[in-house]
Length: 273
Image (cartoon, rainbow, N blue to C red; front, side, top):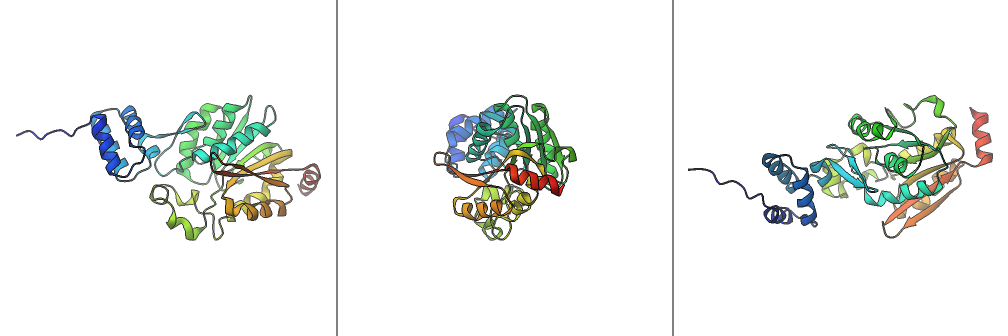
C-alpha cells in the first residue's frame, strides 16, 4: 500500500502555518512556495517554519528598504523599524560618502544606504564569523568590503578621520531581558547580536569612545535604541563629546540617535591622533 503524500497546496500550507501560530500565514506561504526548489524542499521549509524558525532564515532572505538581503541561519534578521535609521542616514549623507556599517550582521544597513546614494565607499564589519560570511554575499556585490573583528579593530587605519556616515546598530537588549525576547530572536539569532550588557548600552559606550577618531569633520553616527533607553544613550554619546539628538518614527516604531562630529570636537580628536 502506498503512503499518501502530504498536501502541498497553498491552502494546506496556510492552514499548517496558521496552526503553528504564524499571524501572516498567507503571505508566508507564498514566500515559502516561491523559495522552494522542489516538493521535498517545500516540505522541509514549511516544517522548519512551523517549529518556530524565523521566516527569513527559512527562505534565506529578508526584505529591507525594498531590497532582498540574504540572511543565513543564526544571523541577525534586519528589522523593518531599522529602515528609519537608513532613511535618516540617506537624508544627511554628503555626496560620495564614506560609509561604515559597524556590527553589520547581514550588511543590510550599509547595502540599503549605498542603494539610496551615489558613489558610496562602503565598509562593513562584524565580530561574528557567520555574520561576516553572510554580509560578504550582500556587501561585495554592492561594491563594498567586509571585515571580521571587534568593532573598529579590523577596519583599515586609513579610514580614520574619513568616515562620513557611521551606522552602528549595536545590540541594545539588557542581558537580563534576553529571555523575554520572542523565541524567533532568542533561540535562532546569535546572542552577540542581541546582548547589550547590563543596561543594554555597554557596546554603544565602546563605539562612542572611539567614534570621533574615525568620523570626518561633520561626520554622523547613527544607531537605534529603545524609547526608554534614549535619554541614557544621548548621555553616553554627548559624554564622549558628540552632540546628539533623538529622531522618532511613529509609523515604524523606531527611535534613532543621530550624533555629529563637530568642528571643535574634530580638532581635539586630530590632536589626540
